[in-house]
Image 1 (cartoon, rainbow, N blue to C red):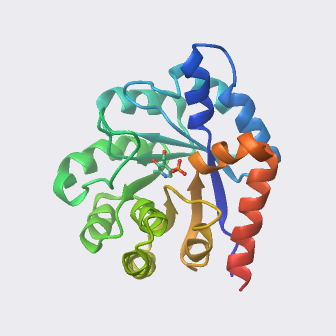
Image 2: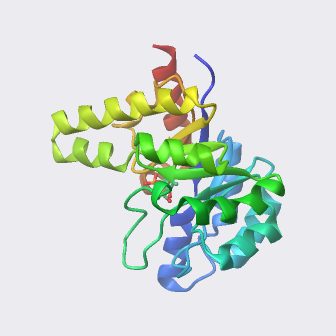
Length: 247
Ligand code: PXP
């Protein structure tokens, strides 16, 4: 099966830094280490409230790495201006609510189609690869295709939550939705990515979906780095992805 890229999200290195208002740990240093450990790309989410990644981190991460930067952002004019300035390789549009702990659901592309079409057009024109972070839902995929996105990233958070809640029937139903919708998105010519909440325990069935070209994984890798170090954590995730695609 075709190689699957691993994008490493380093947001939560900045979360630890910001917890003490210190200069360390530095997410740019983590990005360099992640690249050396085999990450095919670095993902960073500049949130409206700057709770982890800050504006100057984007600059420093971009100049520190040679793999592509996947810049996650909400569809606001402030973020659009920042993305236009940095011209990242990829932009992933995510829903954002201030009170949430993390990106809790997918973007409602179908319900905001006209605005999002206008919003992403200048970024597409600039040469950024535009991705929509959505639930595995036919209407959302079709709308993402219509507005001119090149990529959909399917939200795996619900699948992971069901797994850890021991709700295996619901988990398997969600997994089969993700599989079916990956095939549907691919049939439209969209590149398919997946991510959110993935761990050593949950990655294999998602990594094994042939149409999924890239996984974006952050929180678990940074958490596991506390015990094992970042390099071994990334290498083990890479090994599990390769093993899932080989079998
Ligand atoms: N993909 C997208 C679009 C995300 O917003 C996030 C979280 O920032 C992830 C993947 C990674 O999720 P996690 O940190 O749970 O691995």
